[in-house]
Amino acid sequence: MTKAELVEDVARAADLTKKDAERLVEVVFESIIDTLNHGKKIELRGFGSFRVRERGARRGRNPKTGDPVDIPAKRVPYFKPGKDLKELINEETGAPSSSTDAASTPAGSASSSSGHDDDFGNGGTGSGGGQMPPLM
Image (cartoon, helix red, strand yellow):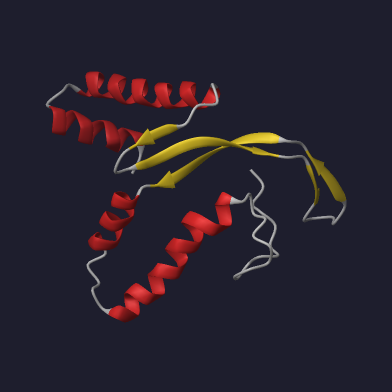
């Protein structure tokens, strides 16, 4: 979904003009960004929470040349989905068979909990423990 599609959905659902709906969406985004910039956490019950994580400086490698590269410390936004959102996403798949649930559950649980909560330092447990985090 794009921002324009979101604006259309908000306009339709709230019976607003597109201009008013666009301003409403902008205000929500600005509020989220401003709150995160002040180091505060945003918690939307039933949806999830946004926060900023500090990533320390580290040594990486240029994938093209293999040369070592200094990567500076930075702050990165992080979203953690809430329990209700996770349940709604899994209900909407419409695949009640156990083989599909088994295939989708590990991927969902790994990406939403263990790998991100400890800044990629999961101690080598599970798959991908030795992989480098994506560069942003």
